[in-house]
Length: 135
Image: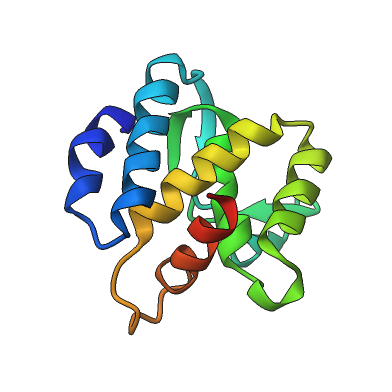
């Protein structure tokens, strides 16, 4: 995915300096990304109260990579509750993950999701602010 983004991100809508940084992160992080199972769409709307177990995760979007790659969904939802850096730090600390790696992957994914400002999709609506906050 990162190798594809190196080619495709320059065609997006984000400012050139942010795209350049995202491409550099992809080129650096992609080849050494982990092989752990990651759900790239884990957020509060996809976690339900369960009956067999206390929690049920729905609508998974699995891929292999760094666990930090999947954290952005926790940033683009529940936007008004805290700042992007504070939410990122809270999630990284709770999960015991690498803060800088999480910040860089979240930045890349925000640049990748940057598009139509009239969209109703939380990922699209918040991507510009997330990218700027993590740049």
